[in-house]
Image (cartoon, rainbow, N blue to C red; front, side, top):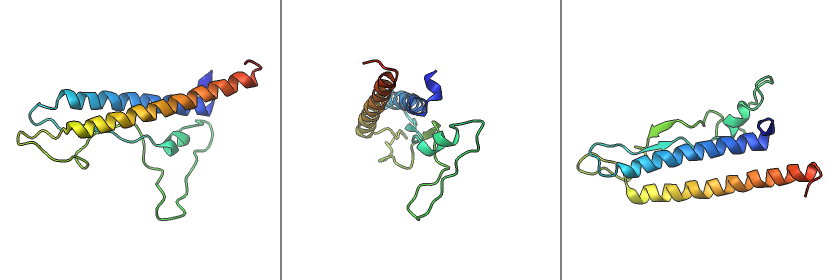
Length: 134
């Protein structure tokens, strides 16, 4: 029922993506001493790609880039990728996991999850108020 309301659908998708990212970061930390292990990460959540899939029967939304600094609509998804470009370095054994970097990323995930949970709670409170509840 709530999946037909955009705020709940998008919040749910964001929470699933953050859960997947937390899982991948935990795997990175668990393999911090594994030779030749490459740190991985999940592609960032893209609000615009969620909107493009919002209404299956309607025409998809097309985002226009009116200035050079705008993000394109092609980003998004929850694909796991090797985090080589942002890696701080490589150990002599070929491992690219940096524990400090992984801990900072986990803190970012926790903060984003808290924010998304707040949006979800406010949406349910608004729905409850609209239905005449307290």
